[in-house]
Image (cartoon, rainbow, N blue to C red):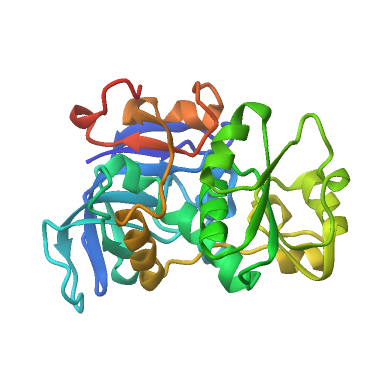
Length: 316
């Protein structure tokens, strides 16, 4: 099968096109024929991309861990998902991902694809939507009527955080660029702060929750806008090893959850939730995503089309 592999050191992290054997599903696993893959542009520098769970170096890893496709084969103890069914989901950070024609995924990390979405749209959902869901509800315990500030509201995770918080009855404030103001308001934010023109701490205070997708100085300044009992969550991987206990406790990594995939799919299918695809590119152009050379709209998620013949018109 065709696949993109991480170059080996000492080269700077980059991707090269190659081949790999089609994997065979083990117990509790599905073999997915990948139609489209969602991409996180910082992934090449992450520890699970370059190391195994045992700490040993990984050679030639295949990145990207959220997908939309069809079930090609099943391992033992799989339940009722049949071959040929359209599904979406994610796989383990330490496993080979889905910038390839096929990938493996655990049964519990896969659910039927939302019927209203194309594969390109569905591939933009799994990690982004579950990150927002788990950050807001499992970690921050957001309640109806509370005020939440979403940093990076026009990004892949931010678009879901704004919508899910609003659907939950929260009052949403967001930071975004001026050109994305109307877009973020359309997602359900009641106030959008242009981060280039204003300091958010001069505009809001006494917040119940801050949901951070930006990190660095934005994260540090966010502690000061929380009210008594306020909670902060961040998904920025660079803070995972912070010496600040508050920051370490605020950080989390999304985990697959089939029940949450089902709830998200239901919201997408009935139109109460929408996903936003920034740009779709063919597999051959995927390396440009990680080098920063790809022209993008900076709204929503970048997606790679594995089946080039089905690329949506005008998306490239």
